[in-house]
Structure formats: C-alpha cells, structure tokens
Length: 275
Image (cartoon, rainbow, N blue to C red; front, side, top):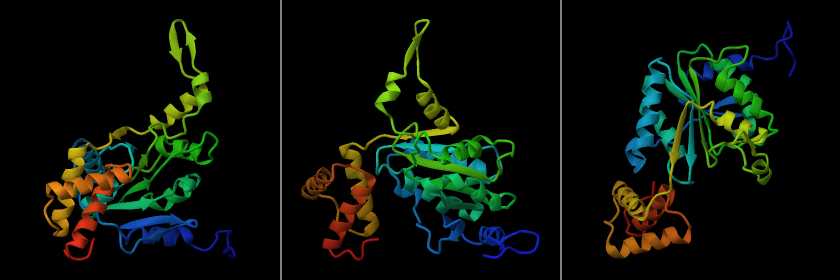
C-alpha cells in the first residue's frame, strides 16, 4: 500500500478508531480491529456455581465502566468452568453503559501497542479479552504484555483493561528444570529466575479468580437449568444417570458438557431447536 504524503500510510488507525465507536465487540485480525456483527450473548444468570467469581468480576467491571479505578483480571482453572463465558456475559451486562469487548489471540499479544493505540481517548471502555492464554519464556508478546499491564515510558490508557483466561495460574508452562532452579538461602527456599519471571507476570493482574472443577450435584444443577431454558423435559432419575454417563464419557463435568447434554435431551424430546 502506497504511503501518503508525509510518510503516513493509508488511514488504518482512523478506520479502526471509528469502528471502535460503533460496534459492540471486535476481533483483532490481520493487523486491524474487525467488528463482530453478532456477538455471542451470554447471560450472567446462566452461569451457575461461580457466584464468588461472578460477583468479583462484575464489581470490578462496574467500577471500570463508571470511570473508577479497576484491575486487570486473570481467570484460571479447569476447562469448561465458565471463565470465557463470564467475560462474554459482561458485554451483555454492561454494553449499554459503554463497555466494548476486543478479542485478542495470544499469538497477537506482541501487537498490543497497535491494538491499544486507536482505543486511547475513546469515550468507550474496552476489555481486551485473551482466551486460553499462556506464553513461553521467550515469547515476543511477553514484554508487550508486561508493558500493557504496568505501563512503560508511556502511561497505559485508563479506558482499557485486560481480562485473560488460562488453564495455567502463572501463564507459562511449568517445566521440570524450573524446579531444579530452587535453592536454599539462610534456611529459606527461593525460586529460580524462570519461576520468578512467571510469577511476576501473573502478579501484574490485580484480580485473580480461580475456577475449580464442578462436583456431581453441581453438574446436574446445570443440566436442569439448561433444560428449563431450552423448554426441555424435567431431569428424572433415569435421565440424571444418562447425564452423568455423558459427562464420564467426556471426562468432564463442566458447564459446557452440561449444556451439550441438555441440548441432546431437549432435541430428542422435540423441544425445538437447540440454542
């Protein structure tokens, strides 16, 4: 693409900035913000057995959209426990108060400066949503993420937060060699440099929320909830056994698996299209 007079290329930043004032959600792809025409609408009421996590993240986001101090958030825990759904539900809850969601793939974190630049100064409040996040020790996005979380010579924008979900609490793979770096100093055990780097990254998130696996009764509660939402049949002793068998086959009692079983049962009962 030919540069305009003065060395500035075609107006990608301005186009991105205008889009950031119109759509509700975006995806960073190929070096620009792409508006999402049909954002995934999730309701907070559909997220069960994560009340503590829900209350904390909603409170943090409410402060953020009100222009009050708020923290970047790290959501960690077992797969299918509602981490990603909770972040998406915030858009449903706060879109009418100016919240916008920007999905950023972990491999694009090295472009954080370019992502944030057109958002700075907007009247909207933006959550950068990074799903299934982990980075290697030599990942080029690591330094960009640290700067975005803490700021470097340039102050971070006050209308942008980062909400990341991860199966790893310290965001990087735990290697055997990391344990070998631990050493004793004056009777105290100290981690090595690799472990310190991992911990220092996760500590830049002011809000940590952990999502433990669901128990059997919690799983069945979620099945009942989704069956009612779909207009499906009530959960009987027999269908409860089928639900638990369904979960066993998938080695997971997650909310996602509960919703999948509810769709299967409701569909077979002729309750209408699974949604």
